[in-house]
Length: 274
Image 1 (cartoon, rainbow, N blue to C red):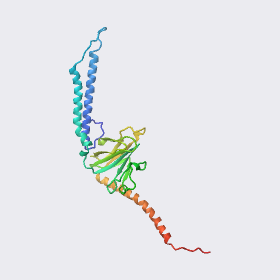
Image 2: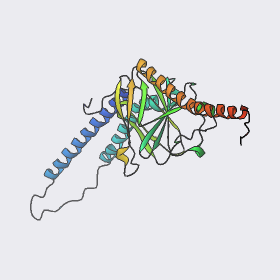
Image 3: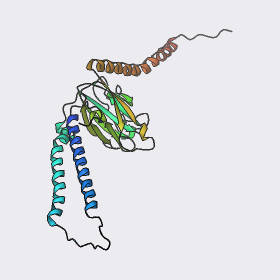
Image 4: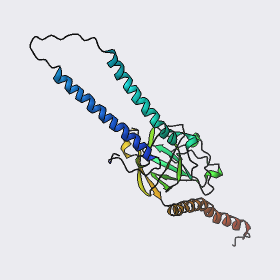
């Protein structure tokens, strides 16, 4: 393996690394071979005597067929070799049943993450509701979306669990890149794409945008926080509590006003004195 690659903590990362390493060393070998032949030809066919004339060489059909067929065979081999890895990562029928589903929305220059509330159901979304304060376009009239909660530039997941991401963008094309998970997937406006991963190790890892999305592209970074199951359960319970408290606060604030109004209506009228 190439020791300068980011640490692999993904269950399918080993296959990706093997493919990357194989292509890398094949490329290095071809580079060396081509340059050795190049230098050899420079030395062998350099001009030797003044007035020496070049001669016409028609070509060699076998040689031309060989340097056309060999790359074709090489690319065909790589295609078949990588097909199984690609299917495991990208094919929906190969995706394991998710333990956690998170919606991810790219926005210049930040990442939004949406979790279902305590009911485990995402609220309905519609593009007409999308805006800076509602990047996912959550329908305000859908009760299932009332307890959904979102984070910005921070995604928290449990270790050794399959995480399924519903990915999209609200402005331009971004690329959801998790180097340690060996995941990179374009986020396209108006489309929702599924991508999954499973982390084998707790820790904090980088989430980056791998698509040039503007002058502030370098700022579009987030943190993937992989916690133990118990720590994640505590974190998610805290989020549920905060969200439910925020929902109950307006109702509690309006209750005293309602009681005061009822008291005013029930109080007897007092005649003014002169």
